[in-house]
Image (cartoon, rainbow, N blue to C red; front, side, top):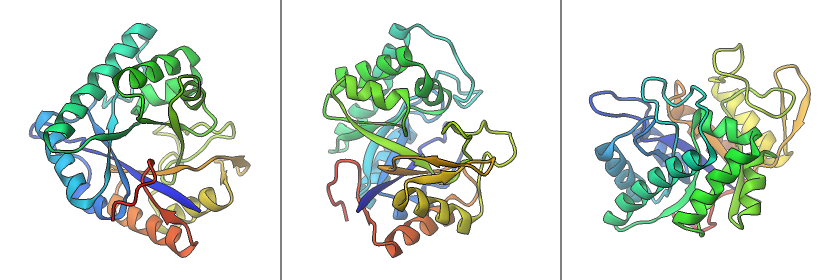
Length: 256
């Protein structure tokens, strides 16, 4: 059995520093790099691509709403064409920076409110899938397990990766608990590792109300801005290896 371990990174911008990218990269197999709209800037994008290359980590685009002040976590209601353009612009920007560094993109994972809205909205999900296919049809589209985004990727003929979250609480319907609600963010390393192992091996996660939710785990996420992210990433990686699960990026190529 194999699985990808990803992290949302590159979310600093200008004089502001967020997350522990240096600490997280040694333990993950793929990175979702902010593309300058919800976070990141051209310099941070390039330095994060360089960091990924040094660690042999697959490079992915992490496009979000154009909302620096809200970190892309506030819902915005755009037309499908606006969403498609928003995503294509950001993916193309990171693809260019990756190419300048002698690399290429592996995957795309929407960020924050864009991700969560697309998980339930077929029109938005289709717009994202069209954008990804238009830029590069070989890219893998990440989406919440059993969500509209995964279905849209399938419809568009893209390779998809069903994603689960080791450091986030789940609601009984399989969606993520909104940030700010009790249990929405999990920071205990042992608990995060146990959750990741259960999702990878048993394909289930316990929701906040105690019910068991079925999930498909092609890739496990650790947020780079979760407190103690590097400790969490190491704990998850160790737990997966102990369980006999091989950690590989979404394309399946061994990077290290």
